[in-house]
Image 1 (cartoon, one colour):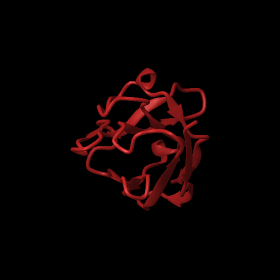
Image 2: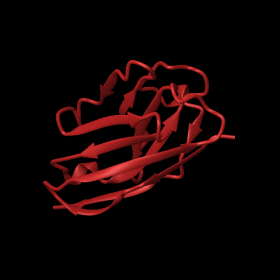
Image 3: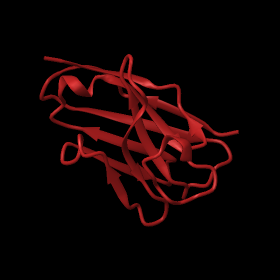
Length: 125
């Protein structure tokens, strides 16, 4: 069984920074594709960023490109999301996700097999 546990959310003023962490445990390859998604109240879950296994190729939603950085530490089984220049529209519950058996990172919710419980990020104006 794979478990993903997010941490690092909180309240921050616009223009500030936060770093989210996702700790992975259980039977999943350290090379699996990983992603961050978010869901604001009344909205669908949306893609934020993803990172592939092995090569560590990264992908970003246009709305966060240049402000967020995703990275992974396979030795520690963690994936990080560094968020800078935060905006009120970044307010959402942020979820970490992992693919079961693919190293490819995608932007599609349905491609991911395991999900964390989410961590709240609130950006005040």
